[in-house]
Amino acid sequence: MSITPRQKQLVQESFKLVEPIADQAAQIFYQTLFEYDPSLKRLFKSDIRSQGKKLMMTLKVAVKGLDDLDALIPVLQQLAARHVEYGVKAKDFTPVGNALLYTLKVGLGEKWNRELRQAWVDTFRAMATIMKAHSFND
Ligand code: HEM
Image 1 (cartoon, rainbow, N blue to C red):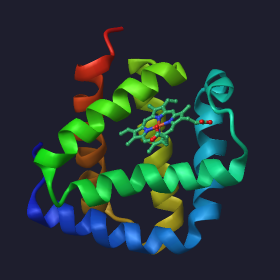
Image 2: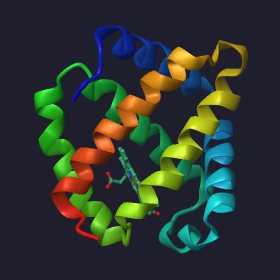
Image 3: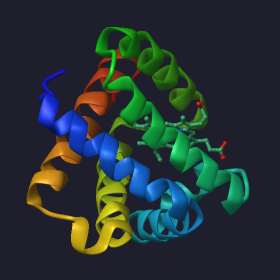
Image 4: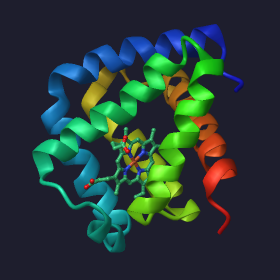
């Protein structure tokens, strides 16, 4: 995965700022995601609070994983296999990635900038690429 040390630092530091506003972030994320693609609603079975925890888990996978990329690959492969079970398709990574970026932008306010955006774009893209290569063939 091609994430620079600077990008890793940016992603990890910005995540710390989102953690305290996890509930609001989750609300923005799911509202935005379902605006982008209402058909994704049916994939999410649990209530919004536990969805919030899931969003933070998603981000945590990204943030923690950057410390040890080799160890992250099998974790992402297992995660990908579970996502196939949830009914997720390869094309769904685009609205999810966009909703995540929008959530970070709103959540971080004036701390959001182009460099930070690019760091998250590259991180999400790297994870999505590994997940899609492993389990998604549509
Ligand atoms: C880099 C990309 C992603 C990461 C790191 C990620 C991470 C996670 C994690 C950690 C969970 C908690 C359950 C588990 O560990 O299996 C989860 C659940 C879930 N994710 Fe993702 N995810 C990603 C992309 C997506 C995409 C593209 C979709 C498509 C809509 C999606 C839909 C779901 C659904 C439906 C659940 C289960 C929700 C429920 O039980 O109600 N995820 N995800």
